[in-house]
Image (tube, rainbow, N blue to C red; front, side):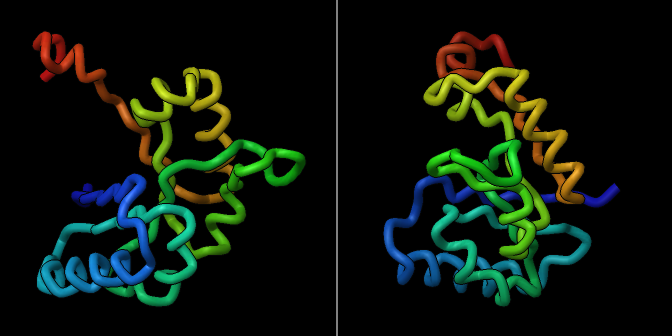
Length: 138
């Protein structure tokens, strides 16, 4: 089994110039890393900027929607992500569950669509800040 390191950029950085700087810094620092698959997950708006530059990394997305197309303002389908060069998609992140009220059922629909599209889901199993502080998780 191969070790995978995932860099979830979340809602950072705020400009393309900063994103390119971060990408180039990671590329330089991780140049000699072997036997580890490195996945970068920048914000959606930067995916196309790195589509052809990820020879040493894999490209991933921070989320997706479970429908291929339709009247879903702001959503991005796994097929769109695949077309952008993504190989991975993060799903079930605690922030998505807390802020956007995503349920296990919604995450399940996303995973099914991701797999059907031949992408790899990165299924998050995490804790809330309160659970972490209370020592309920490790």
